[in-house]
Image 1 (cartoon, rainbow over the protein chains, first blue to last red):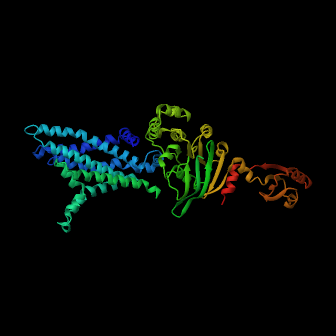
Image 2: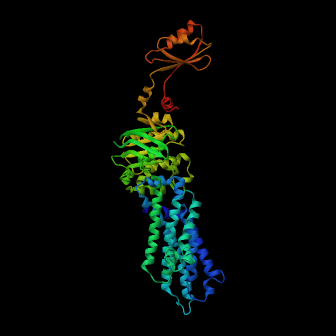
Length: 243
Length: 302
């Protein structure tokens, strides 16, 4: 697993994928919360990171599928998957190596945004008038959400040898898991009869719950389950060649 | 026995890509896998490496079944897949380091340098793989397969894309390796088999049609010798048939005949005398010997 992990990280660093992904993430979220009028922190009147944490998952929705799309699709296209699968690494090891490499990139992309926290902290009146617990919780939520998106993206990539299909599929799946359940729960037919169950299936509900700064084991278990579920699906999908 | 394949069948849907193939490969032997395109060579190799499971039949590598203990088999095998897949955006050393780490090779740095020298990559070792020509990429693939000093080497068309000088070097290297390891290589280049292999397996449409040494294969069809003669004017073929030892005749052109005869009799004297007797000028006479190529064609035709 470590061999695969370091190979993937090296690739991010040597092929600009890593820098571009981080750059785009910072550009989008930065522009959103500091520059665009009417929606940002400066126009909000409160010392809060809320606009950032509302916006970041949407950026992830596009960006993470772009990071993960090549993971397996490219290996299949180039035939290198045959090379990997005949080396002494298990299929699960391959999947985990790629998962942690992509996740690491997502987490590293979040690090520079701590400057935003510092800025908002300084802008508060009085200085420091900001709910740091909620900020910490939200970061944790973003990290979990990033992990879930990465797992979904890897699964999509394992289904095809076409990177564009992998990208679109990953975006669709991320959208469904992130938002669609939440939206569906608003259907009148579900009202009072399973709407909260449907809502609980989606990421958004758990992300918002963690964002409040209250670490509930149910939310943590939810995120871990989503990641494990899609990692196992990816492993199964890799083993399709044996069917 | 290093590699044991018995009654291997691999089906893709309705197609039987490999159909009841059995063979054994021993240590200290280079086994050549010969067959036309699509014969099932690569599929057999993929099953032996454990990349694909067999539909039925069994494979044992150093006594281990790749299905039950894939990790143990992967450690023992060095594999160069068909088309030599590589990570093109890696540097040569970086790539070998990656493969070496997967195999947990000890003293990896020294081993990589030794390997680079052995396959003749020294001049190109600081480049990205995508900047290398096909022949050099092939060497990177070979280096990768031998890096962990495996007991069994499985090379799917190892010499494709090499120029004649490189070809000789790589063949020599494979032969050298074959002295201490089990080497299975596939190719459709006949000269390669004659130059490198101790034993040949010929496979056609998924079926094994021959498993023999080079000499054995040549003997197989030397049940008759062939003499081609060219005369200045046509001759009645019954006169040729009358010569002692002649079995049959094929007319290749107006005045050119292929005469098949019992190999224990030299019919050339008889042919010469006949020409003189019938007042024909003998423009040419040559004896054909069978090459592996012909054996191959005979066994895989149709």
